[in-house]
Length: 228
Image (cartoon, rainbow, N blue to C red; front, side, top):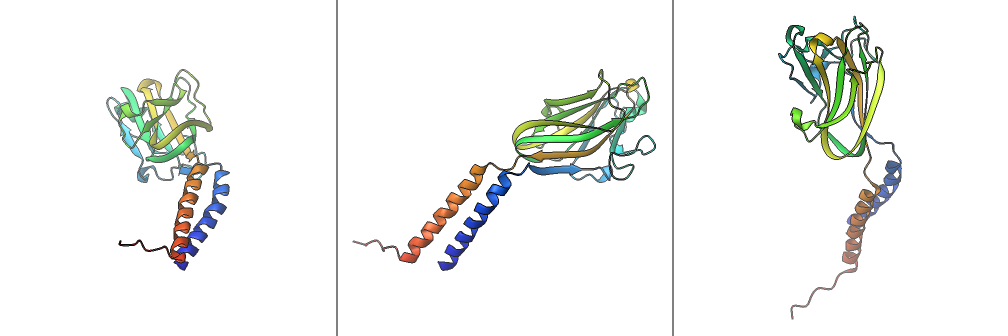
């Protein structure tokens, strides 16, 4: 029982030391993607619901514009060819992996578009609970970039926050009439979620305290119940 008591004491000391540090942290990074290789993205989903469907999201074209950071082509791109032959309605989705979120969470990213005049590129950012990739599941619209509002023609950072406890995914949706679209890029996608509440650590300390108390009782020799 001496070893049990020592382990419990060490765990209590470690928890008491770690909790104040973590509770002051800005958050936990659960996603940080720079799109070095769009073709080999891990656990991302690409779904092209364009009518008729054409090309999905692809590796950035450095001849149109360079990446926000990293190699010149290290970003995700989408264009009017999301609809076959550039004719039809574009509805092209790039969806993050399923993320475990712990309260207030912030998505940030950089986006850019080709500077040719006369086009109205549009990008929506949506959120869906759980791990499914159904369009109906992404019913929380967080941002709309472009469309009737000018889409920046240089890399610009955007961010949005929401309070979620549990699993979910963010989706980037490129959409519109192919005749009005040109070319967009997406880079440096990052999601930060809150650290666990201090109450989580208090519960841990209480549990470990109970273990220590039990160990002390066993050391002292608890009386054996009488069989009479």
